Length: 302
Length: 264
Ligand SMILES: Nc1ncnc2c1ncn2[C@@H]1O[C@H](COP(=O)(O)OP(=O)(O)OP(=O)(O)O)[C@@H](O)[C@H]1O
Ligand SMILES: [Mg+2]
Image 1 (cartoon, protein in one colour):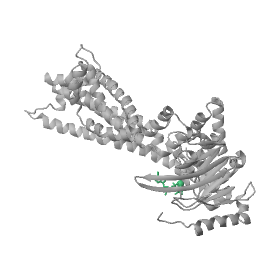
Image 2 (cartoon, rainbow over the protein chains, first blue to last red):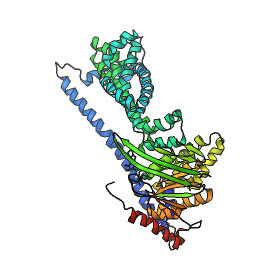
Image 3 (spheres, rainbow over the protein chains, first blue to last red):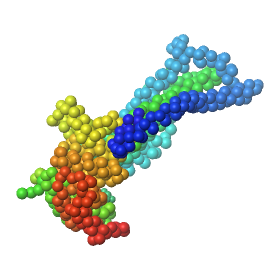
Image 4 (tube, rainbow over the protein chains, first blue to last red):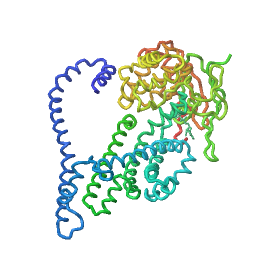
């Protein structure tokens, strides 16, 4: 990728050095071949280095767990018991055996739908409000302490208020997601807007960009790394909140499943649900992080 | 008859709390159409402040700037700026950086295809077409300044403002870019106001050199016309008597009569 660029710079800068390319032509060929081979090995090695240790650790932890919980009188089931008792939950995430008896995959999807709505609203609203707040020093000074306080309130503490306001579990759960994840998005967006370099503002001023153009062409791309930090914290909080909220509001989500399993003493099912929640949360985080690195690749490089 | 561009009795005072610092005092300067004017002075004397006032990015405390008979108060593409630190938008490619300006400035006068052609044409002028799909982080400092120059030129400004455009570059790249700018000035006939602290650069490029006294309350100390014929050739000028005399004058001004005071 960089070769033609480097070459043109050389030819533009130093006009009287014709022997250089000749020497360069002979030498790098075998060197490069070798480098490619070693690079292939390196990639393989790197992959093994990232995959093998966690797998080993998981096996080790499962073994310890198995040993600890196999004793008679153990309060929690060992992995082997979970495997046998929750087998149908593990092997088929998408079975439907009745209105309340569905696979965990479906339950996760139901929860994800609520998260998508609540978090989507939080993203739009948070970025919009953050942009406004970041524009003005006084709005920032006045609102930032309030946001910082509201941010620390646990999702569940909002639930009674939202139940009282909406009188229905579905919008309440969505509201809880919204209110939990909106703060970090607002705060980070505002900081990102504040940190737009004066240079970019000057460019916009010289070009006479109107406010809308300024928003789309300068503000959003310039603040994108900050906005995505907020979005990433927000998605994590949403996923934490939905499980807690569903335990209290019911429905078919993964949170309620745990509560239901607890009430009917199906401990192994709960462990499987926990694994689902952890993995889905991890994937959500990766998705937002991946999106961030695609969108901000230009900004972050500078 | 008034000048093409007139900086008229401009004062600039910065207030912080109760303390006022007067940066510029009574700056008056006429610039003719097609003229290349350099402003030289020690660091911190207020050169950038003056340029920003002309650009409309900083308001003057007193006085004002008149361009083609009309007072200008706000920034606009008729006074395009090449900033000291390139100020390209890092998330846009080289092409898109210039295209943004072209789209904004020429949206009423040019069709889509014409705007594309105009963008490429301006990249051609600074020999940057080969890197048009690269991002600013992937090109060298000199190349970034070239793109900044292309962006400014694409706006067809009445006055082109250059704030130490070569300040951050190594000597070879700097010389190369100076030649480019000189060639473009010759070809396009722009009116240029350039800030510099390089004496050779000022003499080589300018029709007139504005020498500023040290701040606070910097003023125009002396204006030196450079009566060298164009096109100018760097190598021929090295031993040219007029060139050396101009150079001498500027050096004397800067290092004898207005020595840089560290504790400004
Ligand atoms: N926003 C500001 N508030 C207060 N003082 C300022 C402000 N901007 C600039 N100054 C002061 O004005 C003076 C002139 O600054 P300016 O940037 O114009 O200098 P300069 O001649 O461009 O210097 P350099 O060659 O280093 O770029 C400096 O002493 C600086 O401290
Ligand atoms: Mg400056």
